[in-house]
Image (cartoon, rainbow, N blue to C red):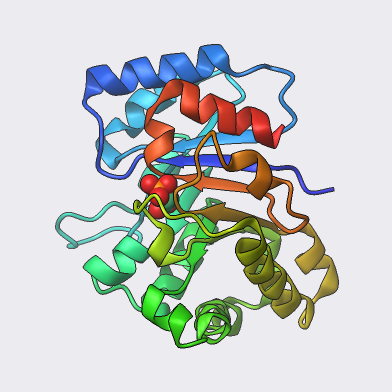
Length: 250
Ligand code: 13P
């Protein structure tokens, strides 16, 4: 049985005061009996605050990105060991905003995935197609290419300690959600792609859906057989919205 995971990707949002309130609210509202796992990924500078506020709770925290390098002259970068040092469990890798706005290609994403695993951070590998690619019937080709870049470099076995997030680019921050069936179809495709290498790995890996998931549509999406949780942007910034999604995954 795969344990559901709901992870909040705060993106570049939140002051220290707002974030403290958000962390406090989520911690308070989470039932300790929750079967679903919950995590938050704040901006780098707020990770120490998350570590402080969430210590001793069942809620995990993680980064939104990391450097492919361990340390050195890389101005502005943050490394895997640094995230680990602040108690991070997860790190998002290859988010579409990193791919499109910061030029991260499949090769760099694969390097970052490896850098995360080297220090026992669990990468949340994001894949997904743009609207143009979907309309050109290239969804599976694009997602396969994004997955294969990592499988080729690190092997199928590396997916024993990873999470995948399917995030159709056209659904991110747009209020436009993939229908449960559209999402399920791609999730199933991802799982079958992994199964062609190793069925056990494919069976066990958690595949999250991301893209305008909110309290009003979470239940239906999470009811799909191959959707094992969510990677939540906007709705993770509001305590009640986020908690409702967490409960739907429970
Ligand atoms: P939204 O939930 O704001 O659409 O963002 C999804 C996302 O990009 C999560 O990583």
